[in-house]
Image (tube, rainbow, N blue to C red; front, side):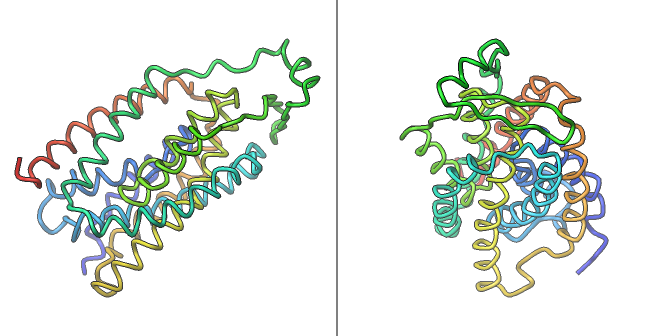
Length: 293
């Protein structure tokens, strides 16, 4: 095993984790296409053993980055843990089911599923924009007994209604978690829109999304990695890759929360949407090749 093979992934992982922390999306959404699209272009020695190995490694890396980010957001005091728990009771079991399902599905189908999902998410990022709750409505909200208030470590106050998600919200959360376990992307990308659409400030939505993603990703990644090890032994996991990605995301996970609010969330949304379009098209091409279309 060449321990220097993936040295370049250290700075890449820092950038990916920083972007994920700022936008609230799962870092695995970016790592998976890097492993599947970029590595084969670098040479056969860089290719991972399978699509499931790529997804499992992406999720394993994400868990460390989001743990770091979780600590950063917790120190910043912008996580709404009560909201996070409402998502997790649905996300955790469905993510585990999705992870078990990944081994039963053809590689081409998994990649096509990822591609279609990120293309759909690109549309959401482009056409949806959070407008917030006007300051003059804070007292009206408080009088209705639906006020939530969070004051971060810098003294900024975030006031918003207690959101109600209904059956549609629970369905979106379940589908996002299932897809996270199966193709590494979904849960973070469905949490943030649900929160911001219902008036939760972007800073709180991104931080709360990180809390949900980390727990969901841990459950899914441990399921996938456990299956890989049980079928192919310890060598089935690309340890020479994660020794660079994990330190990188730990650093990026601290940078992201510190930059929160300094970069326009709308700018981040449009940038992520553009990247998702490119990745979605490229992954559809790869999926077609593997399916023999």
